[in-house]
Length: 103
Image (cartoon, rainbow, N blue to C red; front, side, top):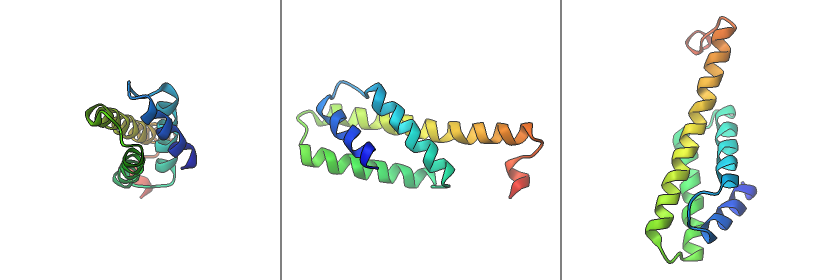
């Protein structure tokens, strides 16, 4: 989480768009959340709280621009979370099992 906080702080200083490094880190966090069975809704709430707390402390000049970046990062996070789910499902299917059968 500390790594994410640091990357988000740096992102808030560069409001042009999500940096590739931050996008990669968001992917990593989403994959880890999926592996730990953290629901995607909880992941998004945690992410938004962290972003909002950092944004409030830095008081960005262009709130709309920061909101667009936040929305893009949330989208990246959701996509990465479900990419992991699809990958796991495919792996189970290849082994002759499905998530429905494993419950």
